[in-house]
Length: 103
Image (cartoon, rainbow, N blue to C red; front, side, top):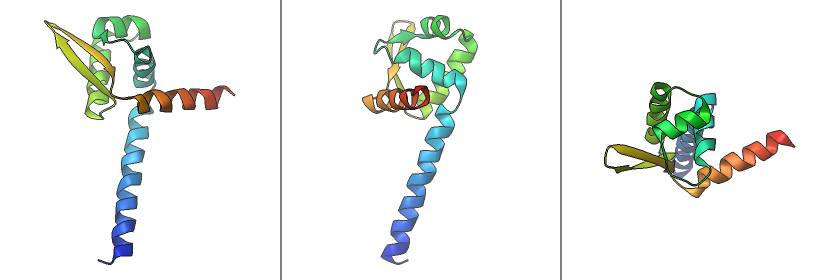
C-alpha cells in the first residue's frame, strides 16, 4: 500500500467515525439528554428523566449509548450514578449546531 493509499484509508476511517458520531447524536432523546447535561452539573438518571420528559428506562438506555460513544462520562456515589458531558467539545458542537439552526 502506498503512502497516498494509506492517507486515503486513514481519511475514510476518520470520516466513518465522524458519521458514527452524527448517528449517535442524531436521535431526539439523546439530544435532549445532552442538552440537559449542558448545565455542567452532574445529573442522576432520575433528574435527567425529569428534565427531558423521557422515562427512566429509556433515559438509562440512551445514557448507555452516549457513554459507549464517549460523549458522556459518569461517577458513582453510593447507589447513585451521576452523568456529565465527557469534554468541552460536546458542549461546543451542541451550542454551534443549535446556533446554526436558530439563525
